[in-house]
Image (tube, one colour):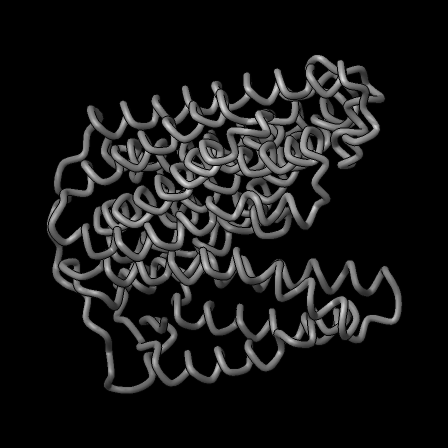
Length: 441
């Protein structure tokens, strides 16, 4: 996630400049080659390097998928396309770890990467054939290279600070130093973006208050939902004595709920306003988190725990499709790449902060050594009193996330959410290759 999160903004902007289709295909190719390198890596150093390159390819794919769907699908059925996309992603989250574990156990870890090569190749060939070129306005804009460097550095330092803060302590030098660096570089980045002719992130995007509403809600959705599955899994291990595999099975109601809801939301969005569905989604996350705060750690209450986990998953699926559709139709064609990149960056940041905040609250009653045991998944080594302190922390974290989701529901329900200014519809260009000055992808 480090490489992907760090590069999302830059690749989103590049997609708007060189063409989303072109960058999307390049991303699949890079991911394919990097997967081969991972599978045949002779040592750990090569494997780590190949994984970083794999992250670059993944970032190019993630950044462009939603924007490409928005380019191709008419607004009247865009929610259906986004719903299918969200469903496939949710299914991958459920099936991927299971299949990966089986492959690693039966064939060895290298086949986790090699098995994805034919899938990537099929995806590349299929995309070349089916993903159309889309005409893009000729703006004459160029990439803001200094802004790109500042963005990568600031986001990278922020990710490093959040990743190390939970385990090393928020006041420790490994967390404080990159945190301060991220704030300083972030401030410089914002200042420079207001002054350059062709900024990496166009400030005019933030002049639309409804867009700010949708960006904020996307971040809050990720923040309030992501860590709940992790905390539930750790609680099952600490209290019920489940191993990691059993605990993973017990939290399946969340990804299953997301899968079902994402598919349904794409259909419902054609009849129910996006604001209504998005609000319902955030409220379901809030209710699910509140249920988990009460039911977790009670061996006899797994039924209610499953309901809470399912509500979080359903809420996430119901929120994602209509809110993403509402955001993407608001921005001009030549800003869809960076707009989706901002949404994805906020979502990934929400994931990271959710994990860090959830673990910090859950382990606040433990000593430093006990916190390390919790982070390492060694919760069975804790005493009864220590486990109870952890459970109390988990419940407090769940209530905190319920509050975050409720705040997101209020923002969506009462914030600006009007229809966008209409622009000429985007049509796939099937006349042949498009010159570099025009658009491809």
